[in-house]
Image (cartoon, rainbow, N blue to C red):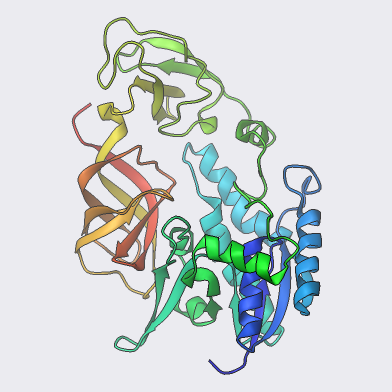
Length: 374
């Protein structure tokens, strides 16, 4: 690739720092850009963007590149956080990182970078972009490090976005990235990877939601319809959840399907109409296992839906690809039938489709069918 002007999203973390270094080594004119996406209590121990900016600026200084600080907090609140709250209030479990990539990092950031005269943008994601000469389309490929692949979070990107995007560390293992950072002498070489959603950070999730969603207590019922506890509000629970149910020490009389009387309890259903939280005992309880799902709000990387037939899918990040059959694909929806039933398929999460190492796109899960009748 000839020398180009590349604007790199510098987060303060080691992945984006090595990304910038690699591009500079390749001879490109590299400019760093730090995105501030959250303003409420962002100076707290949970979400300290000011500390991240100091780290990003230190990296830019070592690399000898310019860095700009840009504030996308208003766009983030309107396009990502508002949708996040709407989904939780509706009883679903959204993934704001996916929406952030589509709406902020590869829309607001990309637009801003192009105004700065960028030929491309680059981020520290573990993924790859490939131009398929046969189809003249750009493809999103998995990162080569299977433990760090982030294509799941990027599945809503389109052709225009991929055409302008570089993922330099997608070709590397995380261990290599850390090694390079140390050899280069980057100040954040040993910085711990960030986890969780940026506006929540490491704080207790329920504590955060309490600020924005009112508690609406209701009954917790087991599969026999017996009330065995009280929940604080359906928005505060997700399917498959085991911790924080308040019934951990309760024993059911007689063995339940999927586990004995001492088996742990899991959230299996949320009935918004009756404000009831349904729980079951045992990780493999039939209410937690689904063989089919339906998804809406589909996004296809090629610009059109793939043909029906055998593929693989993830219904959550870090899940092993699950063989499935794509049914009734359209521009906005699809169904999946899994060869092996899947655990805790959760409405609001994304089902992302793969053909080998190629990420095809995905959609938001709206319905999961039980493998056996309830």
